[in-house]
Structure formats: structure tokens, C-alpha cells
Length: 324
Ligand code: TRP
Image (cartoon, rainbow, N blue to C red; front, side, top):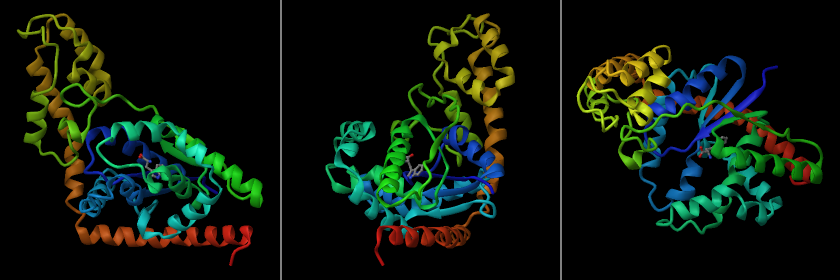
């Protein structure tokens, strides 16, 4: 039997090349070895976007189209939307009964987000319970592994605590999931800050060749390198950071040429444009296949497959607790 994996993303907008390199490439590989559940966490989006819900559905379509065009295969993996499977909400409610408030208040992501998103009113019951909902996502499918970035470790840890608490109260039932950390390459935005929609510095999976070129020409490089034959210091150069991720074989040589003053930034950028185009163009072409109707079909099939498992878990859980 293959081991079970679940991961999710909040539908906060279309995906950029950083998501591709750090998350999706990895998910595509995991499909070969594991039974994978890939979920659009739209209820999680609601915890912070409850006043601004009109984009959630469109973002869900966009994210799923991005996943599929990067190689997530709905024949192999269960691709679904969280709110389509009400068992997530049901398990969330049950787990909330046994989760101490202290665990939630002391969760580092809770404290951070309250500070970072101070413009939103996040002093809500639902937002505090964000990790309980995530625990429900993971435990509903008895997932053994959860591929996530470092920032999500506290949530997987909390999931284990909640599972242990459940097991000690009602009998050994849930496996304790482990995080599956992948080496996440550092991909800065074109201005050198973190790549983020809110900084307007992303290269999107849907960008055309012209858009890619334009963005790359704007990339931050060594400001002291003015003429193409000036020796450069590419320590903070975004172009080199991209070569290190997307053009590993040549990155070292490129760095050397830059330091020796043998490679101008414009030429370097033109080369990078070609490389990124060759990665992104097949994805963009693939994306053309995914009409709204096709995505709805994929999500419906995912919902059915997810519910086959989720319904059994809920009925076993209720049984263990002593409910109907
Ligand atoms: N909290 C995750 C994030 O922000 C998204 C998520 C929701 C998730 N449910 C999950 C990730 C379950 C892994 C497993 O990235």
C-alpha cells in the first residue's frame, strides 16, 4: 500500500514561478510514490478574507488550472476543493472540542499573522481555529506525510498533538503525520524582495514571452556594475539567483564571468529570458486546455474520491466518540 500525502494551498491568486519551483515540481514528483490528495483550501482563505470573498472562487479555478498545467495528474491524485467536502468542517468541529485554547494562542503563525495583517480584523473564532481546520484536513485522510514549507511546521506539530489527544481520549485511531520538508530554493522577486503578489514583483506561470522578457530586464543587479565590462558583485543579483535555481549547470560559470567583467547584465538577462521561456511556455500551452468546464469536471471527480475516504473517517470517528 502506498503512503498517503495531503497538501493544500489557499486560493489567494494565480501562481508564480516561485510556487512552481518550490512546491509544484515537488508535488508532481510525489505523485509517483504516494497516494496524494491536493486540496484548494478555500475555507482557510475565508479565515482572513471573510470580508472580501468575491475572488475566492475564481482564484480556485486559477490555482487548479496552474496545478494541472504543471503536471498534477487528476487520474493519479485526488484534486479537490475543501468546501466541496463538508466532512472537513465536521471533523474540524469535533476536533475543536478537544483542542485547548492555549495551543492555539501560542501558535507562532497566529501571533505573526495578527501582527502582519493588522488591517484585517482577525480576532475571530475561525481565525484562531485555523490550525484545527488544517488538522482536520490532514487527519480526515489519515495522511502520513504533509509536504509543506518551514512556515507550516507548527501546524503539522499541532496536528500531531490533536491526534494524540483524540487517540488518548477515544482509542488509538489517527496516525501522527510528519511534515515532508523539501529543500526550497530561494527565488526572490524581480526587485530582490520576497516574491509576492502584494509587491508586484512576480513572474507568473501565465506570463507571455514579452512579459517575461520585460520583467527580467527590470531585475535587480549589482548597481555598481554600469558598463558591461565592469567586474560585478552578483551577491544580491536576482538574475544570478534565478540561474542558480533554473539553470544550475551554468550558474557557477555565469557568476565567474560576471565577477571577471566578462558578462554584461543585458546579455545575461537575455539568456535567462530564453531559459525561463523554455520552462514556462510548455506550462502556458498546457494551461490552454483547462477550460472552466474541464476544471469543474476535475473538481467533481476529486470531491467524489475524497468523500469516499472522508465519509468513512467521520463515521468511525463518531462511532469511537459514541455519537450516532
Ligand atoms: N495552511 C497552508 C498554507 O497556508 C494551507 C493548507 C491548508 C494546508 N490545509 C492544509 C497545507 C493541509 C498542508 C496540509 O500554506
